[in-house]
Image 1 (cartoon, one colour):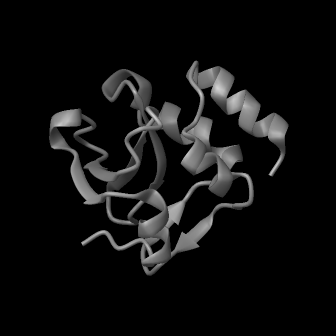
Image 2 (tube, one colour):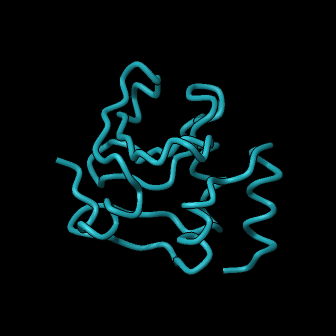
Image 3 (spheres, rainbow, N blue to C red):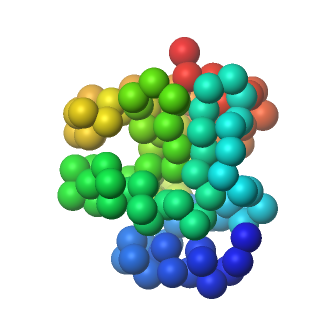
Length: 115
């Protein structure tokens, strides 16, 4: 994945992507991970976050994928929060987040379960 593409996404976000996610997205091309999770490639991040109005509805978070069933996979832009969250696309509010994993890399290693 092009460093220029990632840099462009970060400029658009006005925030750096979390370091624990950058290592992943730099080598990832959009596709399924586990049984039902679609993780976006860097080339899709901006479009998907614009479509779901993530910056306005969930400031401080980025949509990195979906569960193929109407829920967005979210990460905090604050690198200290390594958790993975799900939220319905129709209710993109922080109060509606469901924590599915405490650590992004552990979640990946476990096959991206969404419960």
